[in-house]
Image 1 (tube, protein in one colour):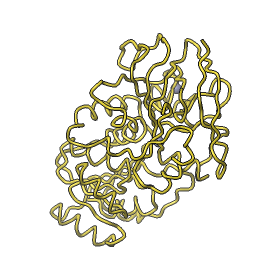
Image 2 (cartoon, rainbow, N blue to C red):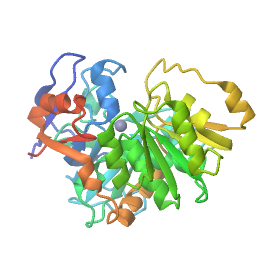
Image 3 (spheres, rainbow, N blue to C red):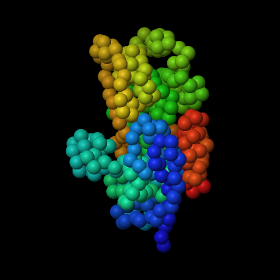
Length: 363
Ligand SMILES: [Zn+2]
Ligand SMILES: [Zn+2]
């Protein structure tokens, strides 16, 4: 029986999304997924606004969850068989597993033949390559994880971009429970970083943003102190952080705001011997100016990390399962739109009504 998929196509800035139907052409090498829920990530907004280039037409959407819609011989990333009807999350990229980046450098997200979902021109074998569609075809080299029944779609949908990126970054820079952390940016990544650090034993997790609503959400996700950078100067926040740390400053700084003041501020607020992780500058020409004197004299370690090693997705799934009773993850998802209303969904996302606006292609 021929399956038809409904997909949304992005044609460029200021052009409405097109909804169309295409036949599903799956080979035994692929895993056909029926998408149950997808969320609009900040990088989808960057693409739509033209801040970041995308090949067109493109089915956007990489934060998604769904069920396997056809028999497959693939196994999950943890070696279990994958069966039709299994609910799954998957790595937002497929990598070859054999090149230098996939092996010696341990950076499969930088694979020489990397394929990223929601970022490809929608044509031929990549027609179904984004989450804003009823179906997506996963290709070999994608890490697929079965979702435990106890976790809802709403709790898990953003983890294959936002949470896995945070977990990978924090695993890379390392976490130490006796430290104090400050996070710059209370968007989705900042909220996840807050609760992840608390679960890693951090007793002081401060978070900085200019939106009081987001700072309130952060408190429910473990942030112990919040600072509104529109109301407090950098020096005032520095003083407050020093008071919280016996005059030391922040041992760990996490930049997830993408704004030009983020990294310079974190370096200024850093303790001697502190470490700064930056994840947020994912658009071209993100030029910032830092006082490198602080970086040098305070012996600050600076680390940039992009996307994630697929094992961070497995860690993220476990994190949600273990901590879901302590944090209301499902509440991070705002209004949900059917696929045919994707233009309205993006308009709501741009208004920043909620941290994540969702699209349910089967509605
Ligand atoms: Zn994303
Ligand atoms: Zn590779």
